[in-house]
Length: 526
Image (cartoon, rainbow, N blue to C red; front, side):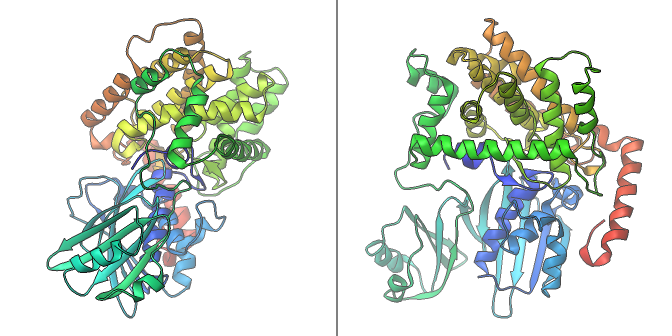
């Protein structure tokens, strides 16, 4: 699938501690619900023993997201923290098991759903930043990203004749015939579902399932983008020094079939959500199941009183980053930019700096779009998932994107924006992911502040003409290779780094006991 700024990089708008866990799981759950037409009485969830999910699914939002998706809820639904209990109250039986599946991807979900009339299986992976891919339905190898209308036809026979008949009656983006152990599945990807009227005229259709898109920007037949790497972008620009935000608009117009006004308008809406969340965080947040309480209010007071070291706009950035992280940890509304774990560095830096400069929300949106294009280059080549790449994939990406955004706010050149992005990521290669007590708070808050500070430093260095030496594409590729050398224990598994300090272990046990006493055994917490 071709990366979209609004699908893969800036978004989704969501609640929960982790986009790789909560938002992606919710989208998987939504597709699984459609596969069952909303009718199921048993849900079996299986996680591979050697993946990341056995140790993190309950505390980082996988359960919350998955069961919210099975309920048909949106990623920003206020009811999400109680989704499992709500689903249980409908009479659905839930089982979560750890198995030896040998799944190659650490974020693999294996679902078996049963109603009184049928059983279906679905296997999917969370690929980072809330993105996911369904890789198997009922034993058929598929590739579904939730970016189009999927009509699944189960033929009675071979399926070849049915495929030919359907192709003559329905204009699809793609029609795929899958075979497995003597069975067939016809998968139709399109901008709309195959209608009942068309299906009624076809012979040999045993059953039909329709899976709705779960991404904000859909794919379409013949879709193409002007570039997919930084080097290709610079070549396409041809030395015209087009502002990075304009190139981002051109990219997303081609990717999503949108107008320039629509692209900028979508980002302005996101900026407004972020500004509301920052205000909410500063005013104060409460949530029992978290490590850190409300801290940014005191920072705000001391900053206004002049009792902090003079950091200029940097202190405002720290305040906004902290506010967003506190909203995230209290299950408030955030934007995964590019992930929930690194949701604060980029928008905190952009909005704080823009306000300090007296700039409006359109300027903020343009800077966010510029950052989004840097994120496109990362997502196209690599990942935002800490379970795959460590925190260099989350915080490193956020710093890189933020540096380019800040150069954009300063009306820097295209080459300066790219240079800032390269320098910011270079300085965060190798950063591990080791959340304390299995909550995405410590050291995540500090890493978000560090990423934002790094973005500001590298933006100013680039504006002053500092040489990044290594091109951005090569830096991204290097981070990807370093990720392969990282032990599993330091890639968001709760098995290494600060996660296994005596204090972290004791804190995790304390929080688990508190959850068990407040939830009871019925909600499978603890």
